[in-house]
Length: 405
Image 1 (tube, rainbow, N blue to C red):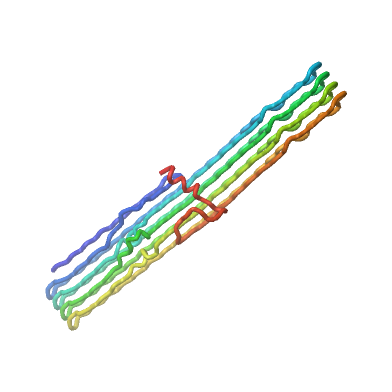
Image 2 (cartoon, one colour):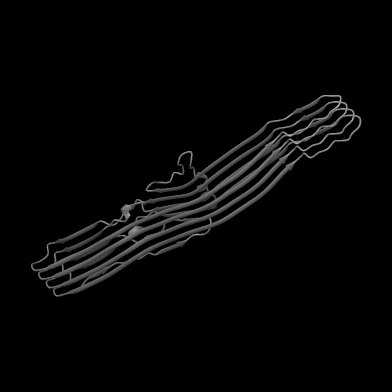
């Protein structure tokens, strides 16, 4: 009796780390060969093959980020009052705050790009050339699964208080000469960029294709009995979950006003304020899932053949192919932007002057606020390009991979 039996089982388990998880391709199981051939009359041959291959990938990120920023720039609150003789002058410089906050957290990459990972390769069974009255039994059970879980949880809080002040100056109650107040500009520039939660899974599509299974019962002698029972079960289960809670609380105050040049006697009283401006840009990008799965690696073709066996032979093949693809993409985003921008160049007082001109000239008061929120995208069955139009561009988030890997 001559039997050839080959078996290979590969099991791979990978667990990722916080903030960035990346799984690279792995070596996967190849096919199996079962041959019962050339055995003599009245021989009895039995092969039981169980081939189990499981790949489990679990990637979990949990990030809690709190940025509390208090920024104050002040050249104001000056006094040149109660002077007698000569000019009284206040001239302030500029007051400027620039705040840049960039938070990038939670990215998972799983790349199993060899189709063999979906089913571990096919099984070839051949029962051939055995003698009369031989009994040949082959039982093959293939169970192969790929389970990928990618989970991100991001909690980002930005509390920013920026105050730029060149105002609140006082040049009053002066006698003789001019009383002058001239302030510089007060500017706040605040940039907040939040990027959170991305999952990319690539399963199959490695170009190697999938090896099917074949069963051949051929050329066995009279009164031989040959039974083959083949079961192929394969599954791909992908679960991608993102939860993002982003809160931006921004209070920006730019002030060049609230200046007083009053109750002066003799000479001019003048107030000339600079510009007061707030520029606030908030960009929130959250929750992206991309799944690219080559389904051809799931469905194993079967080649079944019973041919040229002798008189009164009994030959049976039982084949069961059970394949499943289960993909879940879930996103939950809670984004809150609370922005209070106050720019002020007014509320100046040049009153109750005696013998001279009273003059007030204010600068511009400008507020420029831009808020961009983009969240919750699920993609399936196409390569990730990173760009979903002007409303959702995640190239910056995936730039993390190159900087952290």
